[in-house]
Length: 179
Image (cartoon, rainbow, N blue to C red; front, top):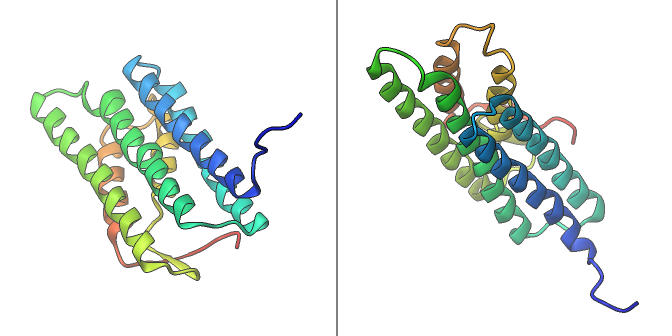
């Protein structure tokens, strides 16, 4: 059989697209009110995000295309999806009504800070450490907290989002683990 075989340089992008796919599914499950399933999809995105980088390094096929695709996928999976999930599952149902609007603003700030974090990461090109908390950690933590939503008080979620948003855009040096 002759065809166009998958080139080694394409393999990491398959994991990156899986990350984006799971982030997309998380958003769909949020719309359907399946919050635990949405959180699970975000955690699967974390797994795919860790694999794409490892595979790219192992195959020595890192590329600018892969880096940009990874950032776009990360914004959906770890910025937008956790923000909307937290808003819909925790903040939107709160009374009084002003709490919902404050929650909406906090969710938006979380996603926007994630975008800033990713843009800065792409520009700095530092390999020894991260500057600010990685968006993968922030979004993954918000997804993990979703599994405790029936146990933790509701205000833990907006407080966590504000702290994580600040940490993503901070200039704190965060060591790279697993390198």
